[in-house]
Every structure is written in structure tokens, then in C-alpha cells.
View 1 (tube, rainbow, N blue to C red):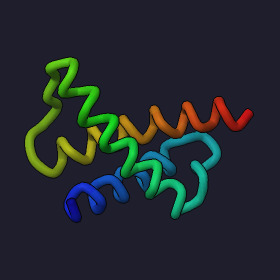
View 2 (cartoon, one colour; view 1 turned 60 degrees about the vertical axis):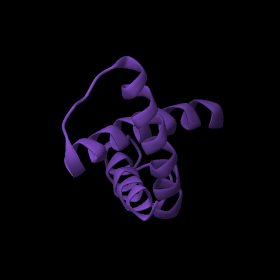
View 3 (cartoon, helix red, strand yellow; view 1 turned 30 degrees about the vertical axis):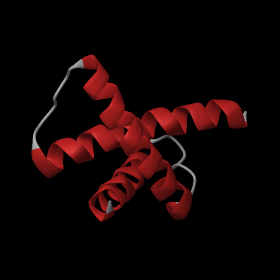
View 4 (cartoon, rainbow, N blue to C red; view 1 turned 90 degrees about the horizontal axis):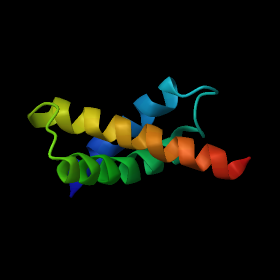
Length: 78
């Protein structure tokens, strides 16, 4: 559980830096990263795709999931 929170937090921070406009601020980026990490893990599992094994793979899945979540949140916000 703690591992997922840490990886999700890092993923949210990275996704916030990748997104146009810098994301939603540090705390919201971390929260969206945790949610995005869950989404990314679920999505890649359903697709039967494995990017990398270990921490780096989990982080990459989390960043992709967080970018998706932040994009959806940005579309809703407008």
C-alpha cells in the first residue's frame, strides 16, 4: 500500500511536469498520480501489456495513467 502511494505520488509529480501548464499543483498532482497509478495498472493489465518489470515499469504505468486522469480533469474543468 505504501509502495503504491509513493510510486503514485512520484508519477503524479512527473505527469504534472509533463502536462501543459504544470498540472494542478503539487498536492493535487500527487493525488491524481495515485489515482492514475491505479488506472494505469488496471489499463495495462486489461490490455495484457507489460511495459517494464519492477519500480520503473510501475512508475511508467503510473505516469501514463496520471496523464490520462489529468487530461480528463482538464477537459472537465473547461
